[in-house]
Length: 265
Image (cartoon, rainbow, N blue to C red):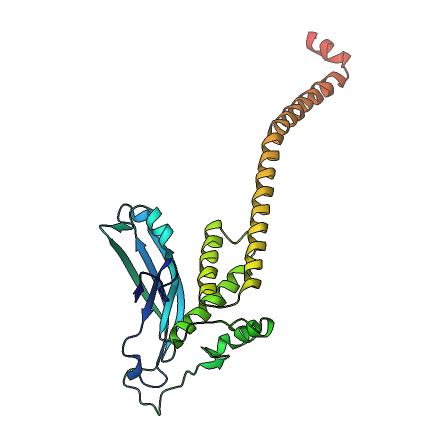
């Protein structure tokens, strides 16, 4: 499912999702754990294609997984090769990691994969603790949330959890592109009405730490470059010292008066 104007038609982005068709007809307990890769194909050079990967449990109540922000309109229009004659090519790769239930499994014999309601969001059992912590620390996070569609709400919550995990990484693990994408995702979530000023502060703090890290690395590289001539000079001097020591040892060796006598005999 592609949303050229974003999933709420108010965000400057292109949204892309993988959807399970006819999900209402699936037997109880049906679920698939899949690795989904979407690539925006650069028609000028495949090396410039943009790829995003995610993993998702597709179940009856959460049958959509993907990216609310696959690429911003600004990026899409600025980078050559993606839009050609008004067309955008998308490549999808799906790898099924785990299978539970078959299409012909009866309701009685199939295991049940339930989602749990946490403040109006249907989440997987493995996500409950993380979502509860979000609400405990930020009681008014959904006070102005506008989306009503349960599947889009699930997609937003998955994006928010992914974003919080990203912002818990060290600056060394994050690239500037990663921070930029995090900013785009955060902007989208704020547009849906989620109150995330605390997360904005965290992102700004992380950007500041990233800049400081880069500045430190730049100064270290500069100092190392300045140090290299001195290191070379030290090595040259050490080499000279070794030679002088050898000459000193040779100069200190005692003479043998009998060597010349023996040779003459």
